[in-house]
Image 1: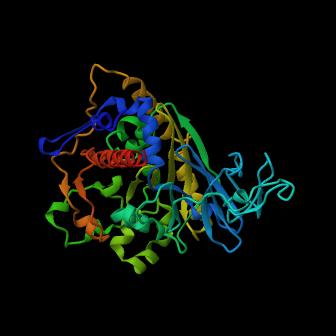
Image 2: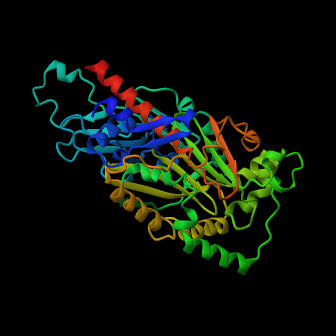
Image 3: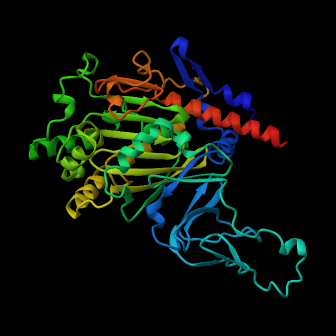
Length: 452
């Protein structure tokens, strides 16, 4: 598949009010291999949280595209990210998802590496009759070309790339909003869920930002929420959205919207207000004193954030971190965690976990609905009688350049924004995904041409 074939999969005509993606983008195996090389192995991707390797000599393993990676904290407490493969024959060095060790010994030929990735021993070195060329070679685990820790969120790249702050752009303010909830940032609640679905990875990318499906796909969860609301009749603290008299008329009647950022990051959000149904309620006054009521209220809003291409943060009554790993054009692995502010009380943590169990994970009331829908789409997109999908135009006349009064509260300047009531359910934020997708594919093709 040539880069011209790839470009032909996205029909992007803003002046005509039209955007569509060819169904082959979800089914073509040759395209999938190009995505692995250029999307995942060709720029910044999310690796995990620094709390996954909190202690000296601890580590966790992940994958970038097809490349196994280990993130380790050395004896000085410094994090590093390395290719998890012995330079000798390519065997994996660390086999567990998480672990701890000062020394890692390849189980094939016993080459040894410390927690800083240094090769500290070659079995039988003196008896090996090695050449001077071999002896002078760097035998350490290869470091990633780029590795960064932003507020506890770890990112890596197999190729040289821009600084992480440039990649995150204005969307980093939303990571700040999450990290500022705790005294020491965020941490993963112990335990993880790993599951697969028989569908393309881009369905998960889109679904996190898809408000349109919620009432159709999750009626059981909605009925549960209604039942609990009637039983509890809890009084919520009034939000600044309701009581601030300085709002423009544009914001009246608004229940949420979306923001699109450069580099393919997007946010779908909804107004909730400060409520004791959210575990963060115990810190509501402290957060208002520290950051102001408006920023505090943003922490309570429903927010589904995607950092392209593989990190998603879903924050509502609880908080989930999702890592997308494509396995094939029609198969995707999801690794998910409950994420929480460091230092929250035991009662808030209990409430967070119970709320999390309701909605998330394969045993929750939402994830099974979503994954079945992905598999339905994978089957239906084999259709070649109607090549172009119609799922990218809702909200077209509501999308405007720049931000609005709500983003101004975070001093955040998105590329585009949409405001509306609960029925609008914007789909134009997907455009950012595919523009970034295409930009990475083109950059990767350019690298291949240059290296040829």
